[in-house]
Image (cartoon, rainbow, N blue to C red; front, side, top):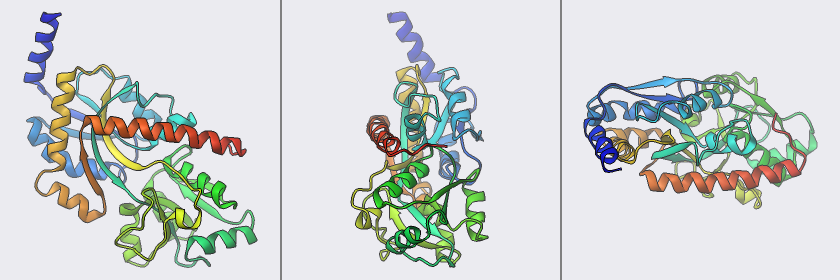
Length: 313
C-alpha cells in the first residue's frame, strides 16, 4: 500500500506530462465559452496545453459518456452543465452524476431567462400565461434538448402555471437564438449571458427570469418565475469541471486547484463577469455538494412532472 501511495504521489508531482483535454458535450458557442476563457490561464498553471474539444449529441450523453469511460488519469476532463443531473434524472443521459465522476471545480452559476421575439403579443409571464390559456396549442418554446435543464424548467413552469406550450428542440444555443431572432420560434429558455446581447440590441425581450429566485440586477423590471407562479421550482444553472471516477486524489487536488486559480486569474474572472456569468470558482467539495443537491432536486421534479402525465420526448 505504501509503495502504491508513493507511486501515485510521484505521478502527481510530474503531472501533467502532456496536453490535458476538456471535453464539452455541446456545440461551440455555449457552455464552452467560459471554459475557453479560462483555457490559457489553466494551460499556464499546469505547464501543458489545455485543449477544449466539443463533442455534442444526444443531450450531452455522447460527450459525457466518452469522458466517463476514459482512463482516470487526469488527461481527459468534462466541462459540462446542469444537464448532467437533469439528463440523468430524466433518463436521457445514462450516467450517475455522483458516482461516475469526480468533481473538480464549479466555474459559474447563472440566471435563466425566458426570452421572446419582440413581436410576441405578451411582454411578461403573466401576459404569456393568459395568452396561452386563451390560445391552447398555439404557443411554442424552444430548448437545446430533451432532458436539458431548460426542458425540465419549461415543463415545471407549465405544470405550476396551469397552461400549455409545445416543446421545440434545437441543436445548440446558436441555432436556437437564430431561430428566435428569425421569429421561427417565439420563446426560448436560455442563460442570461447567452441572450444578453440580444436583449441589449432589441432583438429579443425578457419575459421572466428563473433559477436563483430573485430578479437580475441588469434587468430589474423583469419578474422571477416564482413571483407569478409561486409553486415553480427547478435546479440551479451551473457549469463545472469533472473527471472520470477513479481519478487518484493527488491528481484531483492538482487539477481542482489549477482550475480554481485559473478562474480567479487576472482577466479571466473579469471577462466572465462582464459577459454576465455569476462566477463561483468553487472547489471540489463545494461542487460535489451542488451536484448531489441538484441531482436530488431533479429526481423529485421529474417524478412530479411525470406524475402529471408529461413525457420527456
